Length: 263
Image (cartoon, rainbow, N blue to C red):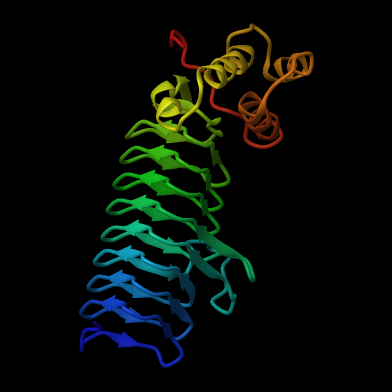
């Protein structure tokens, strides 16, 4: 199952039923769990842990040095990848930039060809990232998000759960959960189809819509809207949206609503 031309470091830990393609290089500090398939010309270096049943496409580079001018090659940092991810050809996933820091990818994600995951990013579960997306350092993407092809995400930003980013867009502000975002730092409304597919009840969807309208359509600024929200009772769905916004305004802020966009 390991091609004769593959180079495996003496300290590498390789599980059972692992397939490794031709001319692939696995460093000595790498751990690969059972039932993984790794294509040709892949490089996995430094401290990388790959969980069970991952598929890694041809030419991917995992664990490479972060693209940070202040990074020291003596820094020990790592990449942690969960289970059942599809990482397609020529993806790059860089390790953390600070001592003992980590770039982390969860379970059941699909990274299409040419995706770049910068240092210290955190990708949740069941996230889809389409071709040629660029995630700068410290980007966080929560469960079930979909990032369209060719999108770019500024360092330190946050994409909420079940959010959708339209292809060829650019973001430097946080995208709250359950929303559709596009163009340059704009949101266009709720991801109603995604909420239905995720099993959200009508009552949950209505509450998220109520929270959305309060933040974006009430005529209040964001801080005033959050203060107003304390006058109402919220279940988990609405509270998740409001918690995200509350945290975001202390950092990068949230993407505004596109003028003329309808809910």
